[in-house]
Amino acid sequence: MFRLVVREHIMIAHSFQGEVFGPAQKLHGATFVVDLELSRPSLDENGIICDIGLLSELLASVLKPLNYQNLDELPQFEGRNTTTEVLAEHIAREVAKRIHDGALGVEAGAAMAGIKVMLGESHVAWASYEMSLNG
Image (tube, rainbow, N blue to C red; front, side):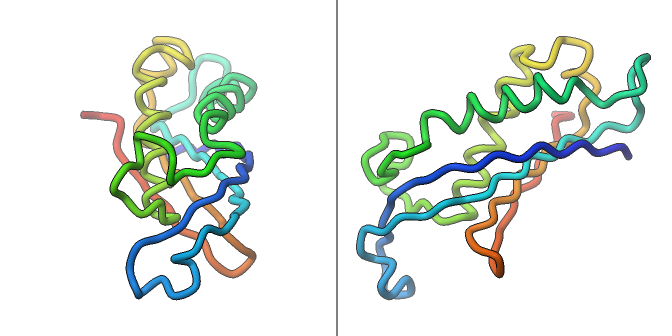
């Protein structure tokens, strides 16, 4: 399996509900390093997984509505704790929608096998979400 990773970052504010979160129940900020990994079983006729520039633009477009936002105020997260895990899943699903809509080109999108989004919330903690694009 071939894999390609692009990286970006977002800065957000949020709070959590639940005693398990301790002081993070209060409004606080976070800067996440976002790694988007695509996989496919074979390379295209150019010897690539997809155009890195297009993939970088796709990731930036998915992150733009989240960047510098208080996630507690966004309707797509209403009633949910925006944990690192929840954000990784949200980003992966948004990327998948755009790939299916042709953001990387029809042929490249159809050839992709999977997506993995990893969010680094610090130098010692990160979470990821991985999904298949074949169904």
